[in-house]
Image (cartoon, rainbow, N blue to C red):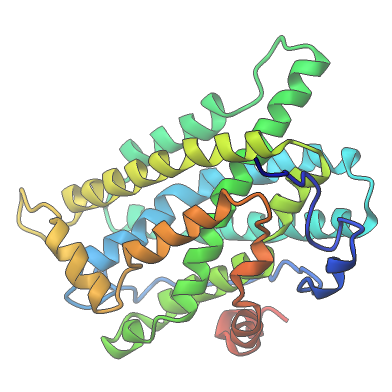
Amino acid sequence: MFTVDNRALGPHSGESGAADHERLVLEARDVEFDWANLPFHYVPNEPLPTHVLNVLHLLLPAGEEFFVEVFKKTLPLIKDDQLRLDVQGFIGQEAMHSQAHSGVLAHFEAQGVDVTPYTDQIRWLFGKLLAEKPGRNPRQRHRWLLEQVSFIAAIEHYTAVLGEWILNSPQLDVVGTDPVMLDMLRWHGAEEVEHKAVAFDTMKHLRAGYWRQVRAQLAVTPVMLLLWIRGVRFMYTVDPLLAPGTKPRWRDYVRSARRGLTPGPWRLIRVVGDYYKPGFHPSQLGGLERAVDYLAVSPAARASH
């Protein structure tokens, strides 16, 4: 039998361990990216790594709009001043992420690549299935808000891991990945590492409960995997540079992961397991120093000041 600590283990727990938690001021950087010269296979001659990364552009505009709307609802419920500031920073950063990835989708559209059959489904997922349901009483609305926050905390666990990976992916530079796209992905990844604990701390602060935390991750993990596989397959069908009928193969993914061009499965499996530990906190993932270092040199982040 184990004991579940349902409080935040970070700076909002009121415990002595809070002093060791990574602390910084979260700011939304008003970045801009010029996609005029973006090649369709921006990882040169590598459609699979390109489209694995493209799934981010398909998922995140609607997903991060959903994050923003949910966390705006949490602000009146937060009693901790520092956590409230962190949530405000989180909201600002996620809004910019949605806008930046929407710019890539607009570029696809301008190039005659229609991704709406997929993105419309994602908008339904976040805008209908996971959205607030009309006609609920206040208690039901509060419970659903806790479910939404828990879902987002589970997703943010993945985005933090992916952010750490993209910041430590030198092979993407070696093969000549488009520098503007790489800067966009690393800027986003660095900010995900910056705010990796905010959704989790909010979930704990609102006392969503350990079992809700576990249930959300059990739901999110297979859905994320399915959406990613479907997203890669979809991008293959609309890729104008591939022969009709070309399909992604698992051996291509294994090859690209071994080369460091896509995240490897074992790292993801291990960190998913960490999330179920009763004493887990996102600060244990690390990576903040590299994130801060990258944001100091990112062309887009520097230009935003």
